[in-house]
Length: 210
Image (cartoon, rainbow, N blue to C red; front, side, top):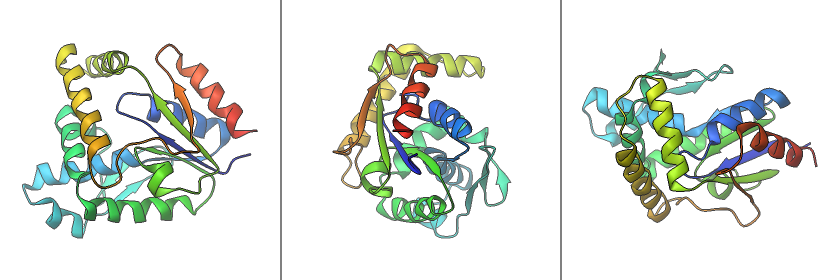
């Protein structure tokens, strides 16, 4: 059984959804690194302070139920707004933000069997992970998923605008100088475009047990 599982991929590929399910099935701890960047973005937006000032004394914690805490306050729902999503990409560009969060993420990974998802887990955060997965899907499919997700949460959503934002996020994440989004050489590529959630989960479970 693989003890440390790293799941990377672009926005909307299904990383969080399947990672949560796999963690529950295996009894592993799920670590959503994207939520940590969202928490930094939320603090920047709420405080109006520069990201370097905000990052210095920030405290981010994730519990076993998937709840996110920022400086002692639960912000699980607050970090899922479109505005915070855009801000997360912006704060992720800064090396000092990535350094601080990477240290926290590595520390979390030492506390037992974990599945951690993000954009640089297999290449930067946990390069020695026992299993590396790279999830992807077409831009159209990822936009459709995000559109449906926002509608379900009663957020205003425009499919074409979401598609543009995802394409821009892909460009920003893959072209940034520090820890860009890319597939690790030893990762397994899973295209989820035409797969159900359960099919993706089943494949990751199979890989984890081989």
